[in-house]
Image (cartoon, rainbow, N blue to C red):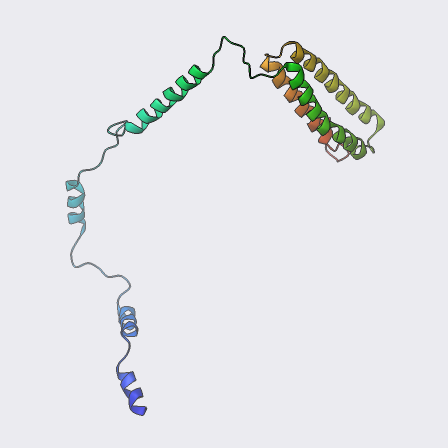
Length: 181
């Protein structure tokens, strides 16, 4: 076993030997000749790629344009603008279902609003409830207009915006400092 140790010390693993030799090298090795002239020559001899506006790469634009045209023509051929849509529901049914869904969301919020803001000054509460009454009257007026003009999408959008505003008002906690009307 003593011989094995002596033999093992004489034969050092190659990775340790390489590591030791690498450590002996200088940190920065200077080339034996100036390399820049040959680098410049190679760069100047290699043709540089120039960017072009469309060049040979026009195919993706053509495919995109074709898709836009195809989808537009499909939409125009399936929608007949002169005929009233038979898929539209009667305005009264649509408004009734929208109002019913809205009231399901609104009514619990009214109770929550009253409970959250019950500690406010009476004049502030009066102002808040007056705003809620104004929004409610406007909602009734717009619903009446939508029933009379069911094809008017601006009225429907206005009604949806009014619903959102009232719900936002009801979600507010005005008892927190810094919040105002």
